[in-house]
Length: 445
Image 1 (cartoon, helix red, strand yellow):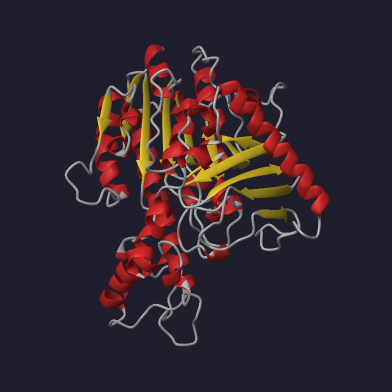
Image 2: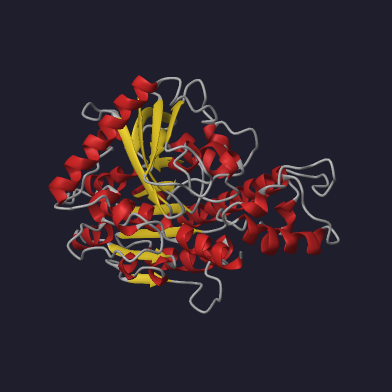
């Protein structure tokens, strides 16, 4: 059996047509879901990329593996469990078409082949999905009859969204520069907003709209959706190449993401910070011909810590005791033995230092200090009634907020004691990119 793991960066689940989105963004992923199983509530306990990818490969919560921020000073212990290494020990030929090792060297651990199409590029986010496929598909054809584990990481759904010209106006045929639009007025004042406004959107304005400023945030949302459509097309090409090798029936395919993406909700513009479900909820689709029943959907709460132990269980390889995630294999096979997670505890420490507890359809977000948006230290949301997390109920329901906070703080305290840590790493390490942005703003003023 082979394993093909497809990861689209910054891909939020609710912008995929197979998750009920209003636009036809993902026909190939929808077809993949019809052939296999789709998890409706897969969430990541760590954002953004470096914490989330480390969680995917270690099967551990970020508090355990210690990588809580993007661009921080913490390093991953060489003793941490690592999925590619475990599969390599189990006899798989391991390969990745990716460039994360340029950020952190541990992302290359366990890969016999690490193919970086952006090695000579000045901007490593400029790896188009077609360029990724130009490296992944020849490798796939050359090694189709080996027992392989191949990771393919697409970047096009990460800011700045720049789909091909043929897709650029697919979801927005109008004029986003009209003076009646004001949804981007506050963007330059937000973290990253000044960069996006002065570089990315100004470039689009000059190239496509005669220099007139882009005013409608929905135009940018449409660009994101078009980027999803483009990645979906390239996933279709990758899966077609797999079919051509004659090994598709013997290959497990998983399509997922490291985290989601905020469009312009919560005052956050086109990035992946904020412990809201738009960031935490990711797609998770599994096709395993002959083993996973086609067209099945899993409604229970699951976490991306389960990816590594699930793949090891499928490969009949030992699961390291240090992995904390629960194997999803029983759920995939329709057998008893898997229960949905009772709760999700998630953290971020890149633009904001915050924890959240999500359980029983409610979410508490607890800040470790003032954030860059001036939000309160506590946020409480009723997800069923308010899926967009727009109405903070912390003051209206203080008893519930206090109970959830006590549960969250109790869990953190226990884990710190078990790990021998003297201090919450969000406090000890502090925010990274947000700190730099704040310091630059202070210098400029």
